[in-house]
Image 1 (cartoon, helix red, strand yellow):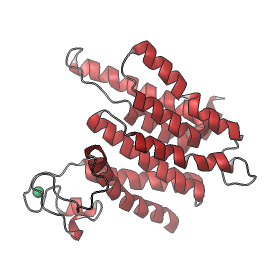
Image 2: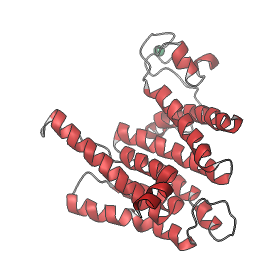
Image 3: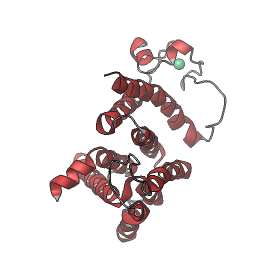
Image 4: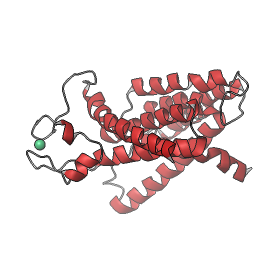
Length: 253
Ligand SMILES: [Zn+2]
């Protein structure tokens, strides 16, 4: 029981840091040493206002000083990251793979939120995904490396192009909807996931994004339709694929 709780607690704490990343990276002050503050009144947050999840609940979702509402996304990112980290352990047990997978999920969470906010994926985050992806590729050369999937080394390299190239062609055909950031994202995560899970994840993401697009079209009408970011759906597709893709593929074939 305790290891899953440990993953969840670490996930919660890291989730709090992810909120900082989501706020600061698009504003170009990631490395600023300024302490976290209320975006409404500028009041510097005290330690007891920075406890993941519990501070939000304790403050009932409002700033202690100006009583302005705090975005519900802060606790959602924290709880969501805790859940994702716990799922990594439940699926793959304690080991280097589940820890790296948790890092990948956190990066995907940050990418999804930033894409929602500014319709852009910072390149640095995709590069970070690519760097994490070197580990499974290297491990694939060794017996008993702890990789959950028995994929030869080239399966990871092919992962880089498995979804990114079809997406690139699709972007040329549709002229919109799919951006360069989405393509780079799928290339980067392809090295970590290998070609099968990357294809599956991209497919799931496109289906989810397509369904959401139709729902939005019906709800808002053609003219009022806002641009919809794709990365949150690709991220969700990849998370499902990386957690349960093995079972899903076994079920299909
Ligand atoms: Zn405030």
